[in-house]
Image (cartoon, rainbow, N blue to C red; front, side):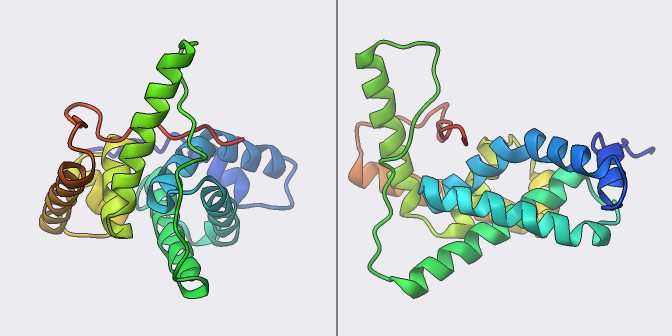
Length: 206
């Protein structure tokens, strides 16, 4: 079976040569192509807009430094999202070590919509804030797998490749994440129904 060509292949090749004329434009294109998705994943793991922005910068800095080690065994996006998940978890650990009492807040959350009225905006923001608060109660690994599953719509196979896990571990972890999130929601926000939209979109990165 012939493997699909990575849609980012040309940009990646240009980015492997920092001295070339195409390098700056190619790297900027990669950044523009993925920054919103990188931010959304980081936000769901960290629960804070400022920290998520830090991870966006950290992740692309790592991409810049490590791109020569990317051999194309997977899609670039798979490799990138693994960097994002690991950077988000590392960032969260650093925060906890510096200030264990720090309480994360989802006050910075904004939800994009098609010009809703003020009441709709308030209700949507409240719902998104409650869902994020529930997600905040989970471990970083459970947050990450939920973000990849629902924000990136990844299959079990894609999750396994991105997280470097076996298919069985992916299914087990995702099941644990669902159960944990359901328990938090049932306990703290019994009015919520996460049926079709467990994870509302994060605010856009500026």
